[in-house]
Figure 1 (cartoon, rainbow, N blue to C red):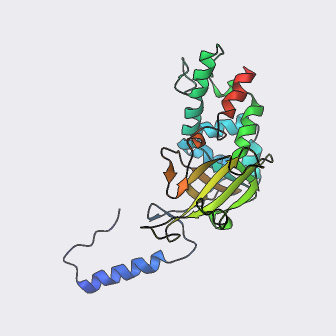
Figure 2: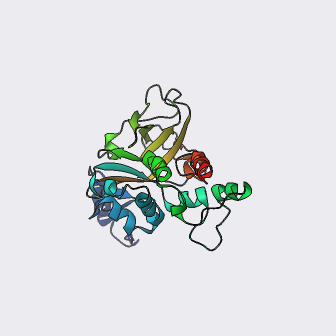
Length: 258
């Protein structure tokens, strides 16, 4: 809880408090979240981090179904983590007596006469791996390790291209947000754009990072935001980022396998 400076404090005392606050806020290499300092280090590997957080219960199951548990436990990786909400929006609810048809995949399967997804293991492991790998990168990369990107001035600040774990291509960069119309003076925010066709860099789906630089023992986790509007900060987001794999390609692959 924030301290409240009572109105009867002497001006000198108030000035002292303000100076301490300013000096503290200027310290480099600190981790802040919503204005409050937080510890980015997790005492365990990335798999243990996912299993310990109820936002990633389903994602942790998918890692196991994809046969990538060892990667998340032992390899040095950077994981742009979608939350369980992404799976719900992609498929609908599972592990219920009657599959929820609000997800586009289950609605499509039902309308085309195919069996809906009742449990995550109904989907083939190779499909889980194909789309999960789009969020994984070899090596450890914090926000400070990525170049600047300006989506309105990409010829000057283009971010950079990176290979996903299984060799597909994404663009990753740090957006320097504007404040009151002044460019690049605001907070810094990671943006991940998946490229569907490397020969056409404009054919992308972009997701904003909600929390960056979470540090388990074997890598870094950047948590992706669920997109509810066209922009998050200065990041122009795409509603397709709410679907697992950044598009409806996932449910097309599942439907063909049913």
